[in-house]
Length: 408
Ligand code: SAH
Ligand code: SF4
Image (cartoon, rainbow, N blue to C red; front, top):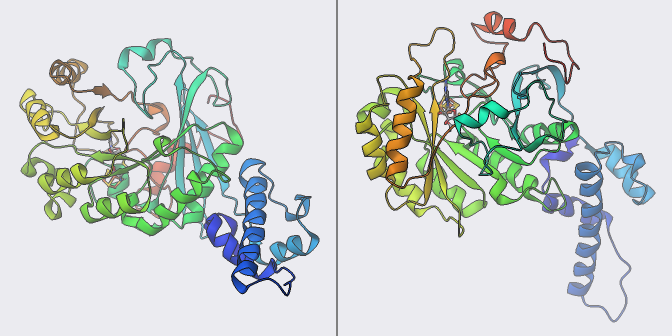
């Protein structure tokens, strides 16, 4: 069986070609005949994409405008993959976290992060701290009060990059996700709420799982598929330089870079990847990244108390990002049990932001969402198959499966 969500529309067209034969007329050339077969297969692929991704139908028999033969072939060969939800939990700020069981009983998390109508409209996942005040409390993701619903999805079970401040990094890499497991996270979340943006900021380093992530993006961007615009899909990376260069050639999506340090010494101490590709190499790749007009790279900057939160760091950030169309997203460190790092004070964060803004940089502070349910950045981790799995399980215990829209 092939999982439907592992197929781009072109893959499906190739599969359907042998089933889409046409009668040859004597006056027709071989090329004309092949073109006709291709057109017919394309039309069918489009119909099937609409049924699955836009009408959420999973049963081939219900796809009434497909021929009987085609339906029966699909039944024998292709299956629409479903992720089974083990648990879900909603935070007071509306952030909703889902824990999925994969077929091999490993687990991953995805999060829906809503943005309130009164928040500043910018790209995915930004926001200014004061806007927090007016946010509806206890609203579910299906509420019409949200202006934006961002799906934060995982690309791997765990992560191999071992960033010191990140809970997923502490877990280590278990395995890559297949393209269908990535696409299906969005597909499942779309059944629940009208997702507007996608960020690859859940578990895993997306560019370490390059081919699966690129394929998943193609499907997410397909107009007949989930139909997301390229501006609304963001891949966040810790800085795998050759993969950044390759990504620019393969798929047109927005790019976010986890910079997190302003000197190589500082960055290498918290992000081992910097020993392989240092800040200079990383920023060079950013300069070369093919950005469309009016598009910017997002630099994420996790602020760690006493480590990278000084005004000297802010000054270096100004220098480093000079000439790169970009914006800075400051993320005050989300503390988690057992972490050696601390979050800087709100005052420190504000001064840091002001320093950047005074120098005409766009700098937002990412509001920590879903902290009460450990759904914030760097707080995602599988609950099983890890040494600390039991401890993590406690975070989830209070929620019953299927308890959507209930605040526990
Ligand atoms: N692996 C990718 C994407 C997932 S991490 C990457 O590193 O970019 C998403 C973001 O969360 C990164 O910018 C990372 O620096 C940040 N992050 C990780 N742990 C965090 C923590 N404990 N507090 C705040 N941000 C964190
Ligand atoms: Fe992996 Fe990103 Fe966490 Fe680093 S910050 S360990 S790259 S998930």
